[in-house]
Image (cartoon, rainbow, N blue to C red; front, side, top):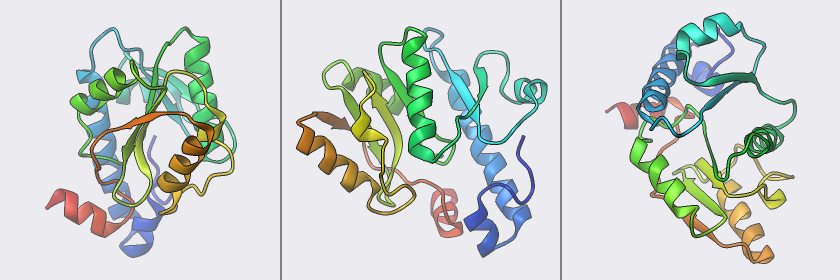
Length: 189
């Protein structure tokens, strides 16, 4: 579960590890509420980056989501493995989200699934140049390998790759990811 000094490190550097932990816990609680509100027919998997206690994880997230350990590698590798697992389990559409977007609602997730009926990829673009949601109807290599993760070029470069490959995509509205203390203040204010 969340540990002091291991979460929201950019916020910790700006303020304190305790403040970063408090913000992270609030973000996770918001994500848990979203998970609980999703329709029952949507299968949910929550992946954890660090080794974790499954019993504590279940007490934190409840019994509905399947809990698992994230794959090794950069963010793209971890997301790719999560998508592959979901498709191998029988999913026809997969939507990946993180816990960093408190503005994300059930309507955004529902809209992403609807968009995936018409195009193979959907993005929820973030104000920082990344994205808060990535959905797909199949695993698309252009979405995962050698991208500038955690930079303001991520979304633009991903779009360029899809455009070059002729892969259509849809978009949700732009929302804010919480990466810095200013992001948190803007969303909380």
